[in-house]
Every structure is written in structure tokens, then in C-alpha cells.
Length: 332
Image (cartoon, rainbow, N blue to C red; front, top):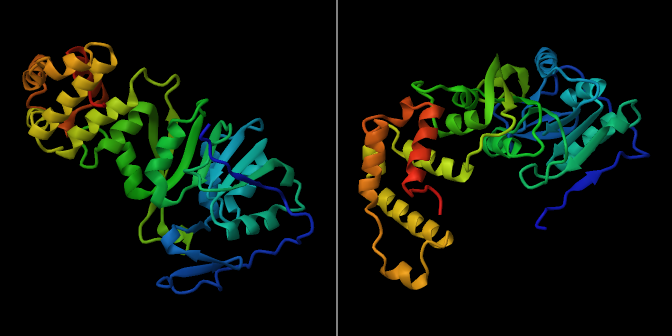
């Protein structure tokens, strides 16, 4: 129930494939709003930058260690430069493409080849579609959806083996940042809770057509399997609060009046949901002093003067566990 439908696109029967135009002579000026490739206008606003460097494509394929039994997910295949290489090795490739023009171009390119039967092409927005089974993901992903897409992949069941993703360089550095690094952030903490993340290589912006404004990087994301036994919504609630004022001490962050009010409301909600008090009692019962509980946990864990940017995963796990023990929760 509630599942969104997506459209599976069958290979055309009577369309002769167009040959891709050779060389870069069709390239327009980099300041243009679009760039022609195989007769398709590429829009900067949609994050459409096609990978033209075959060495980078080959490196991504090598890093993925694709087996002949693998079902590979590709997101945003464009005109299929990476797709064709994946089809040569994998048992099956599921390509999800939002742009109908790219869907047509990829259909034409694969039609009539020995690999056509191995491609499942889905015309849909990847953030809105229910992902089918896959055990490997290899993709040059649209930069605008990098963060939500990473967490959609990491929440997918069953767990896949790994993802080799081309992303904007700064996003990659934030994904891989460690405690104490300048770019250490909520994104890093949440991703590294759920997966092992490695930076594989830097990719020049000149490897794309049209070139984006910044360089890219390829990262490997290997989900932790089984996933940690943590309520992710509550975990993210704690981490979000901590990094909203990341340069403040935890004592200053968690004793901030709006935070104490939120924790008090969450405590009341959890008590009511667990049968801890009925409707009438909820109105009259005196709630514990949340500020004192926060102070106690921070004192016992010796994190009062700590800052979020210095805390590692184990530190956040301990904090969440201790707060939960005294009835403090970070989700309603």
C-alpha cells in the first residue's frame, strides 16, 4: 500500500539506433544553458553532465568488481556510456532515468545489440520509485539529489554489496570526513553509522560534457550488514541537534531552552504511548526536570564540555543510550 508505480520501458522494435556523433566538435560554449550530445540538449539546471572520459568509466567498473551473476543498479544512465560497459559484465542492469529524451536515446543505443535483453530501463524519478532488487550500484548520480539518494540506498532491503558513486567532490569529502576534520558533519556521522565509506579517486570537471563548475570524486559505500540496532530517526534527531550548533559545547546545545522544551514534549509523548499515564494523568502529572536529567547524563559521560565536531560514532551511541535510559528521547 502506498507504493508508487513506475513505468518499465520495453526496447523499441522498429527504431534504428542513431550513431553517437564523434569527437567534441558539437560542443557549445560552456556558458550555454545546455550542451548537445547525441542530439540531446543537456541542461545544467538538471545536473546533466555526461561522463566522456573512458578511463574514468573503466576505473569505476574495475573498482566495482562486478561479477557475472550481479544485478547492477544504475541511476541517471544518460545516453549509456557507462551502461554499455556494465551490460558487458553483469547478469542484468536496471537503469533508472528521469529524462524521457535520455530514455529514448538509451533505447536506440541498446536496441538490436546482444545486451538488449539484459537491460531493464525504468522511466521514473529515482527518489519516488520503489527500488527493485539489486546487489551492486554503479552510477554517476545527479548532484542535486546526492544526499537523499545515498540514504535511500542505505535504507534499501535486502542490503546490497556496495555502491560505486560519482559525486561532487565536496560532497565526497564530507561523506568521508572523520571527527576533528573541518568538513565533519551530520552527513558524515549518519552515513558512517550505516556504511563504510572510502574515497577512491578525484575526477576533473573536464572529464564531463558539458563540464560542471567543480571537480568530482568517486566513492565506495559498503553498507554495514546487519545494520546497527539503532532507531535511526532518534539517532538523527540527536545528531541534528548537536550539529545545528556544532561549535558550541554539548552542555550549551542541549540545555538551550527550545531543546529542553522539545525533550520535555518527547518525554510526555513516549510516556503516553508506552501506557505510562492516561489522558487525565497526562494533564496533572508533574514531569521530571528535563534540564537536570540532561546535566546528569552529560556529567556522567563527561561530555559537558565536548563539541560535536570532535565526537566519534561510539560517543554519539553512548550519549543516545544514556539519554534513553533516563527517559529522554530525540523523536516524538
